[in-house]
Amino acid sequence: MAEAEIVRLLDDFPEIRRGRLTTVQANLGYVCNQTCFHCHVNAGPNRKEVMQRETIEDILAFLRGAGIETLDLTGGAPELNPHFRHLVASARALGVNVLDRCNLTVLSQPGQEDLAEFLAQHRVTVIASLPCYLEENVDAQRGDGVFEGSLTGLRQLNALGYGQPGSGLELNLVYNPQGPQLPPPQDSLEVAYQEHLQKHYGIVFTRLFTIANMPINRFAKTLARKGEYNSYMQTLRLAHQAANLEQVMCRSLVSVDWQGFLYDCDFNQMLHIPLGAAGRPRRHIRDLDPLTLPDTPIAVADHCFGCTAGQGSSCGGALA
Ligand code: SF4
Ligand code: SF4
Image (cartoon, rainbow, N blue to C red):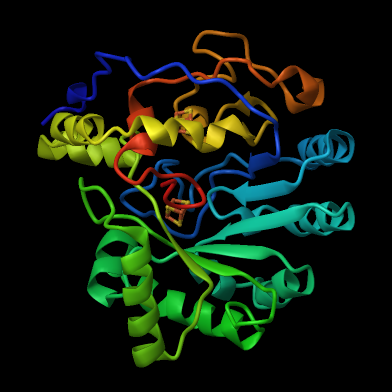
């Protein structure tokens, strides 16, 4: 089936507007040590897009002036950006909570052997992809050997206190479905993960976040090749829950790309839909006044049904 199946016909997602800005989500570049088939970033080892030091300083300047509570770091593998540790240490010194969206295998990449200690020392919250607790499913989605590498990373983090009750070091795992289905209920899946990982591997974690696969980029192309794109979009549309509109993450965050330009979320960033509306000129974080954001419109399109279907989906898991 051709990629031409990916046609956005309806764009009838309800209008939503911004609330108070609490979170900056920064994409530090598209370089990754993995090439997962569901990746909405099309990240991989050969990507060249990397946030430069000047843009890192622009983000820090914004954090200083805007009263931001949380800096959410993503990529690619954000830790592979050469300025990652400077950004984390500087943001923590400002009292900002830092989230690291970690693929776990990066913790054992050459040159990253002390990364887990660095994260613990700066009390960074780790949000780690583990789309199943079964080896064959993880390797099918993320590549051969990724499950074993992920366990190694989780053991490293547990040994430093991550996920251990009372440590204050949060280790949250992220589940996403293998294919074009909605995630199962988050709470019951969390219990299944806890039981299986504890019993078979002695691994503990804080919370499980279930997220829906977004019908964009590599995942959308995979669906189109299989002739499943339109049926997946229909699944998302039919499961739309208006109550989730109140809590979608774009109400309270801005997404910054590797060059410092702004979007309503990481998904819109990947679709090149600028902050506020498609077709608008791009705005840069160094020009953003956060006080002008509340009650401004968010750029929505078909893919937004991925955030509001069923129990809802965000970078922090289910919304319901
Ligand atoms: S999903 Fe995450 S770990 Fe996988 S290729 Fe994309 S950025 Fe890398
Ligand atoms: S895809 Fe982005 S803009 Fe659309 S609802 Fe989700 S977070 Fe908001």
